[in-house]
Length: 219
Image: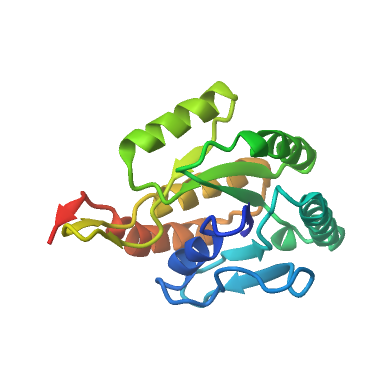
């Protein structure tokens, strides 16, 4: 199961990857170096059966070249995977990450275009609201996206957040994100999710991602 992770620079893509695949260990780097040095990076973990995440260079909407270039390499990578004619090597889903604190007016058309292009290849696009520690802010963002006709939206806190007043917000939403991804891929790619495949990945979600979900607490 291969998922490509897209989003603006510093939105939390690498943090998401590290906490789903590597239990919070910093394997995926946060932030890319000079433009053109590294565009796509694939990550797999021996502890996570059948899941590969593809990190991408952060989008900079103030730079037209950045958006066009990412769009180009994304399409080329996906085309290259499909040309292998091996369903296990396809890109099966895209997680588009949005900072939950910022209404993404300038990103909407880019996401629409992305979804339209991916639909022809049966690749679902799930919007991931990162840094989702404030319920009021999340509800506002979800309503905004609903009004824009985006249905597949998951809010996540990838790693524990501790505030100076002793309030701790534990990770949440990672299990729901992977579960939605599994369901989308089962529907879109017949034959991809074998019984063993599904059971092992589901077991990992239950034992490693679901356990982090709990209420906000004080130290």
